[in-house]
Length: 420
Image (cartoon, rainbow, N blue to C red; front, top):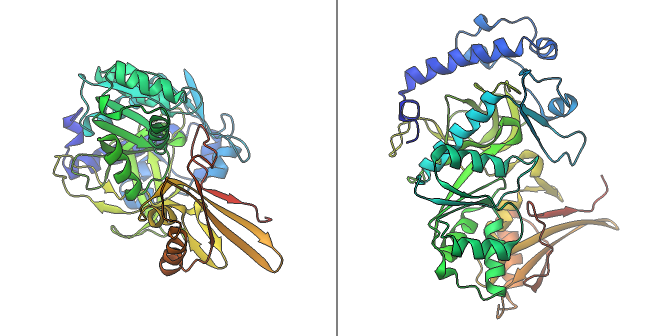
């Protein structure tokens, strides 16, 4: 462990530490007039137990956008900003104090150690460096750990492979679909993957299925770890799965987790899936109180893990409530389609779900890339599997590998051309 005194803290002292930091966070928020209006007539000392905290109002993504740039900020001495892409409306801007930057390095170093990474490793960072939080988070954590860093950033996949081989990178960090691009370029350029020294992959920022995880591990001969985090919470480092692979540890001395009904907001019991609600306990620039992330997951366990850590463990994120697709009255998530596709031999990891309106209704087409020599009959089998498992009746179109566009950032899995 990187900080064993905190990562292995017994549940009762951990709960007391959380409560103390809840009050500190509330005190910080109440210095801001916008937060005071949101929170109403409450003082930090009014929070005496978790039940008091969960009576506070939810914070929404729209509120964070409307607060652009600094309406909900509470730091003052800012040293950095990161922000979301802002594809709809204002971006979500997160200002960082020196304390925030230090906190980010600590939680990221914890994530590295949980993934079996040490100061003796060589870490290749492929997420971009810029307003996106990914690259910097991986960098700070690696420096905090004392490991060697290859800060390559996004793109230049041929160079990534060359540096990975020549500089003997042992750890690959990436958004979840980028390893697939590495594999594609390696095949195109006849790059010998057996010359790599990789042993660990730490991937996040996108939903990726267990089937996709197994394919990446098999083809790159690595052990992968699922890391979570978002711009709003300060970037990657919120949590990661350890070697036991029994759920994603969330660092509860820094974050409070709730699972709620996605519609009503009522609390869900451990083991029940719902929407993830997060509060930050140590972030200064942009503290969060009961932020509805819209990620879908569940609490798997609060018991001590085989690795010795005591923080609660979440199931891998299944999707987002706002990623849910509704087609002819059927609700589904792209990850469900991905799992069904990858169960068929010869099917590539690249696919796209296209929805269009047509006279009298709407049409769904699943475009699937296939590998050379793939049985053409796989299209009919995929269509049958989608119908049997999800009650969907899409057209299935097979195409050669490389047909679909490869964006530099996150993969585009759904193209919805229906009128809003």
